[in-house]
Length: 535
Image (cartoon, rainbow, N blue to C red; front, side, top):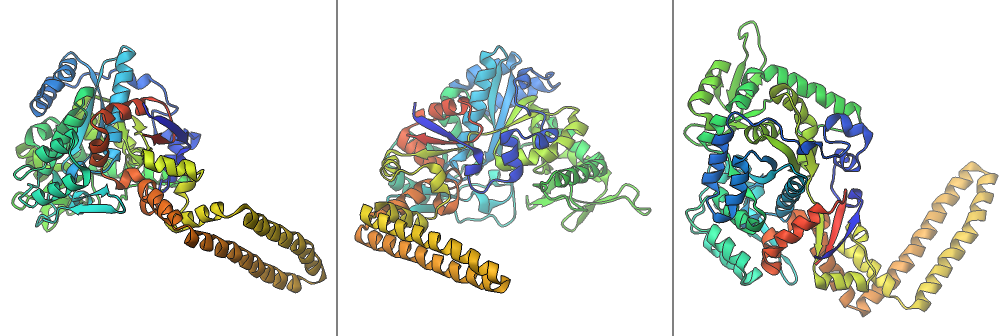
């Protein structure tokens, strides 16, 4: 088991204040989350849905491997579920994807050990339609990050999970072989991502193999049967549209009053639903026009097409797969289908939950507990050696660019005599300036302001001397810049968390599918912030 350090969540860049306050368990966010303060009450199973046997059989059909048998048997015996999910992406998608799966598995294991059987399920978000978000993957190479892109973009904004891979996937898999080398994970990747398979099938197959030993089940809910089972939620979103819209607007005001901003915009005509076009397959946002004297039940619009509420209810009855839940409704749809006890999400999803809670209350009459997934940076041995050599912590790496980090390393590498002289000069400058500035300000306010400006210029020139000395050291010791660039590329590429940039398959290829158990163990070890994991 690798060692790890737990940092406060606010060391990680790019997180919303709402999410950071949620992680800290701040009292101000508790009205928006039923699972704060954190406890184990979620482990008590909610009543079995009426469609339980049917949804379990769907899961059995989609998870036909021997590795899934134990989890399926537990569900048939009434085990509850811990749910997570992710958009289906190219060649396994980003690193945070297995972090989600590992967290769901860890929580299910903890509940089961406590006497409350639970099964982890990974929801394949195949209905999302932003192809540009999922058509690429980034793998670390020796001196660069290599971005592989599937360029055959669909003609329309169709659900990405159903997009068929064509022959152009072959060269991308070949490039992955060159970058990642031979491994069981690379074999699984090549077997999953091949012509004739969909993005959803390939992604689901890879993660079912990656977490087979942990009993993870995958579910693609885009088909007719699952939408039929979940149609009560979709129908409520149609028939209660105006009530739900008003509740969301009120929740957004409450969030803003508390000092936050709504994570998902709710506009005057927005709704919770999309319509799949019957011919093109395009996923089109359904807009809602409020009731008027002429149209007392309001009107729905998808592109140029208009529908009454009865029209949409008819589409739902005849072709339920054509009504697709949006970001705020999807967790309610998921939890209705699966009787979810706990939902595991990333920073954006946990933030969405503060809004979705009002939909849970009105549609399901209950709230599902939410928990943040494992947040971590994986530190490979060579990078770990550089961090130790230069006495760097992850918190410092996160606030530096490659250039500023190189400056820092150079300043630290400077001979002791040079450091002492620069420090002495800086101290002397400050010591002489302070009483002089006080004297000049006492003589005249305008003179004092001019003195402040002049002293700022002097301090700037002092800092310039430090930079000149550091740059000279960096030029003399060329490895310092290479070290800085390697650290930034590995841990904080472009100022973005590693887990959001690096492809997960890179780490599975290097450390085997045993990494799944490692991540599950890490997720089971409480850390309300961000982990540095020393591989």
